[in-house]
Length: 143
Image 1 (cartoon, helix red, strand yellow):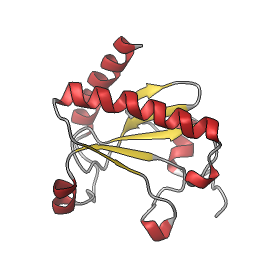
Image 2 (spheres, one colour):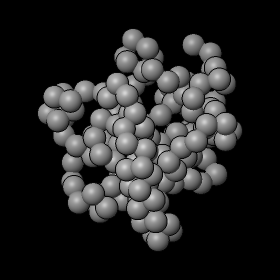
Image 3 (cartoon, helix red, strand yellow):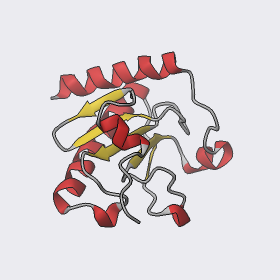
Image 4 (tube, one colour):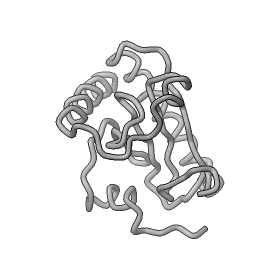
């Protein structure tokens, strides 16, 4: 599958769509999912054109995982939880719906996710914004 620069994550990276940013460096961006599977559901995306893991250079793959570790630590501290589901889907056949590589970090348990599934409508934007600000402040303080 070739990369489609009109996907929503590419638009977020270009500043054409808003997001609730919690972490950013020169290679990655992390923000809260507006269709969360649990409170604090975050995404980590590389700042390069990649549909799935097999498209990522080692440099960007490492950057995604380093950022994911930081975000996960912040989720645990800010949300006072230990369980974080790390999920990444490759290709439509596996359930990928946005064709820009991304990692999900979902403070939850597999059992909770199975019971509740993906939200079909966006969550409360004010609540997401407030939590994003808390997570971002925590991550900024760690830098």
